[in-house]
Structure formats: C-alpha cells, structure tokens
Length: 115
Image 1 (cartoon, rainbow, N blue to C red):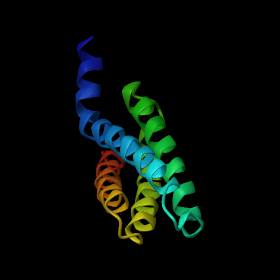
Image 2 (image 1 turned 180 degrees about the horizontal axis):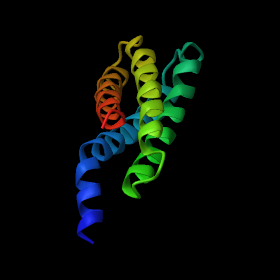
Image 3 (image 1 turned 180 degrees about the vertical axis):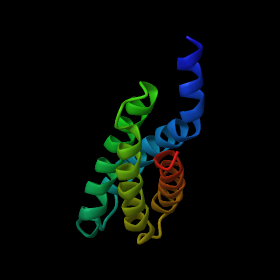
Image 4 (image 1 turned 90 degrees about the horizontal axis):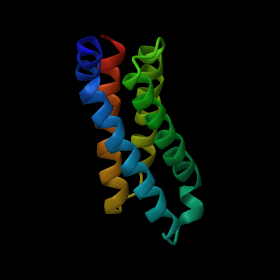
C-alpha cells in the first residue's frame, strides 16, 4: 500500500490543480451562459467544457498511476493553456479568475509530464 500512497503523493499537486481547474471551468461555463455576449463566447464556452473534462480525466489517470499519465498531462497542459488564453479575452471576474486557475493547472501538468 505504501507504493500507492507514494505515487498519489507525487502526483498530488497536479491532481489538486486539475480538480480546482475542473471546478473553475464549470463555474465559468455557467456564468458565461448568463452573459449578454454569449455568442461572442461560443468558442470559449466550448473550450471550458473540454478543459474541465480533460482535467477530470487527468485526475483519474494520475490517481490510478495510469500508463499514459504523463502523455495525458502534456495534452491537458495544452488544453488548459488554450482555455486560459480564451478566458483571458473576457474582462469579467469569472473569466479572469478561470484564466488564472487554468494557467496554474497548465503549469502543474507540464511539471507532471516532465517527471
């Protein structure tokens, strides 16, 4: 059992970042649906869902020490970078906060992918 605990501990910072990013993306998604300029946010809203789903899968992959965890985290970092970029284009608080959290998650996923 100690091996499992060590694996999870090694991945914990990235697991936590992905969990936080998932929550931020879903919250931002819900807030964006109520914005007057929803049509201008179409691409961003879609990316929010993709990012949240990718982060959820990353948590699962790292938690079970999946064979492709590093590759998955590398792709997750790319998606989080894109989501952060898309959200940063909108000045409302929820998008700006989400952009920051996505960028933090991308950074953690990059570290995980390079382990």
